[in-house]
Picture 1: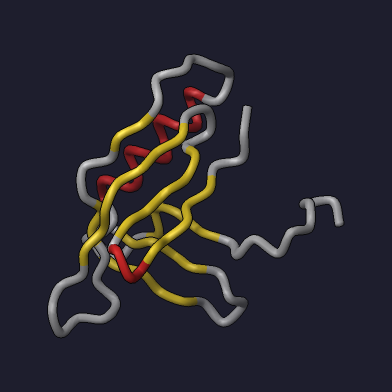
Picture 2: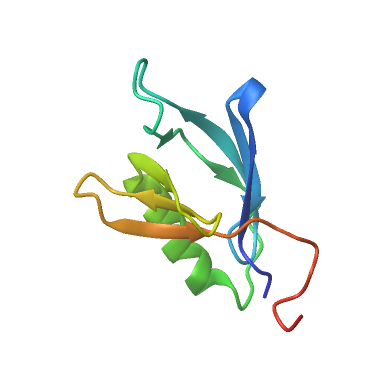
Length: 100
């Protein structure tokens, strides 16, 4: 069971991460002239089974709904659906554990 994460390579419009069990890779795009737009392309993943599968399913389902993002005052990143509802909240990795 791993902590899900996403890492963005803006130069290559690529995304890499872990959904909770498997490594995921894919692409993202933005609408020209709309800096807050965000759409994930087809994602590929390894195919291991594990205790994080339920979480992973929810992460991948949410990623399919993303149409935009908002940078919050606290530095977190909200990924939003077409109805402007937050479907994922990303927290910048500081290298510290949650208990620190």
